[in-house]
Length: 145
Image (cartoon, rainbow, N blue to C red):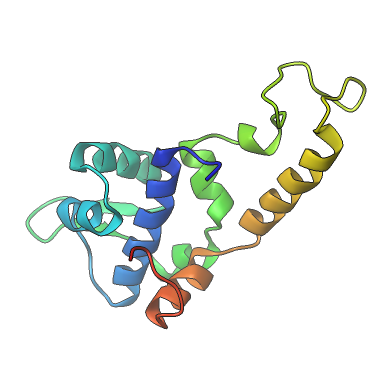
């Protein structure tokens, strides 16, 4: 994948939390960590970033946990998770990692990579958490094997 491991886990965690929220449940760190296959301490840091970015909500206490409002599930797009965890550079960086790559000074893959990068951004900007969590509910997509 082209995203960091933290970003991959962040997307999976958000989808799992959305799925539980649609069922009217909050979910805890241990359950999220187990479901997405990520170490608890690493998952906790990822969830903190998602809370700070207003993607998920956190409630403390014995009946606490993580959840998402119905509005957030419907409105939040994949691109917001990527930007919260990895930043937006993936959508503007050079395909070969060069610092000086541009329209006027392109790397060998610039023109082709730009098309892929822009298509990825468009897909992520038009894909909602609701759309993906619905696929999980319908069992037409899975978070793990």
